[in-house]
Image (cartoon, rainbow, N blue to C red; front, side, top):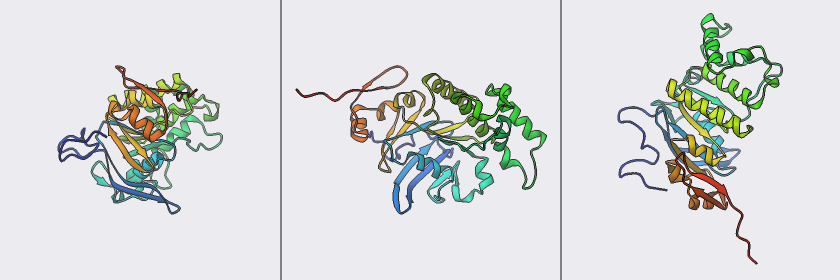
Length: 279
């Protein structure tokens, strides 16, 4: 890991002076069923930044996103836009952070419009119903993501890429400025992977979204992320720009893989290679 300048914490290079980071995680510990999953994790994501967390299976990537999103108890270790996570009520948190899970739960028979409307729940009073303003927000989001023609379609009838756009639409309908993406392209072919990630990056530029994601495809992750964080056995093993994290030495050590890393103008290209055979 390349050390930060003196007096600066790893992963804080992009935080502007006087502007609270979108995400600040300090000394995060998470145990599930008595098993330590995350141990002393530090992470900072500046407003408007895209940070992608990588690491081998079981490293704690999804657990980290769940803790940041308030789905796991970590009230004192996480701050969102300068506010301790524990100080945000559930509805307040939902207006700040939206999560697109790796495998979202979709009720059977649910249509696209109804699913995206769920994103407006933080703004609807208890026992109330959506207002004309809520419907207008959803219509705008559907139009922005080219989903207007799918309003009445059941999600189960859509392709993988179309469903992923619907999941993003629900997140955008929340009006949140922090987007948590857990393996957003894991079930998509390469064309739909690019489509979804380009869409996220465009929305980030147009609406000032901050993105914290996890991804398995290292080459694609390096193309879109401003910075990357490598987790292994629940600890931060490296953090920095993609070319600082996607190195043959680090990937070999933490993934136990044989790879070749080729620099390109768009980011490091990570190629798996076969181990050298001995006669």
